Length: 277
Image (cartoon, rainbow, N blue to C red):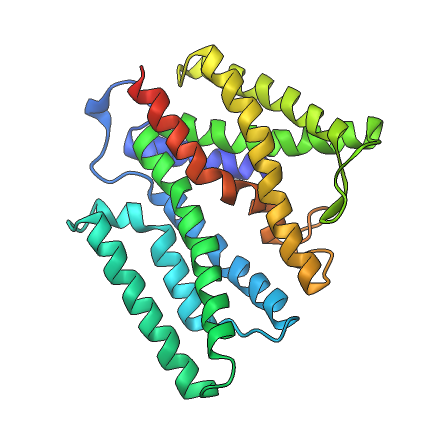
């Protein structure tokens, strides 16, 4: 999966010229492949979240939630093709999604569970669609290497947490939500995240090395918060994994959970780092 992901992201950068240092080589439309990848991942992620919701007798309206999630996740990509104010466009889009959810609820279930059903649908669309849209935005606005840095810092922090937790874990980090997480594992997450972040910063010129240290430390914790968020959902639904599609992981949600919560924070961090030179 790692090799496939790197190949797709690098090929995406080669297609639109963002791998080069010169902006003259950049194509007017950036991030085609990463936008398609995010859109495709949104489908199984919504299906998995729908099953978790069903365990609590909540109904996710898949035709609407999948379509809305894909459009929201790739919002920044479409802005390159269609000129419209981002703020007003998102407000209008959100309004129509809400109208569609209410109409679907009325036609299928009447007044039974309207608050719960519409609420869980809004959560699924914004959790999977809005948060993942920042991955596409990072790719388009900051380039291939910034996206790879973000993803690898988060996923390597997961590896560090798992490894150190298995070897040295004694003190529970969040026993109520995820009993397997330990403070020793968190220390391992920080160590590996900082190493990866500094490596990307020095080799790709994304940010100063000291900013990369802060980035690694911060996103080791934020990535674990993303993982704990999905763990809360699974624990509420009394499920160990979101699915059994990916050996060693579980489901698509179990792979992307730590990235979702971290993506908007990473966008803010990169914006400040780039603006600060």
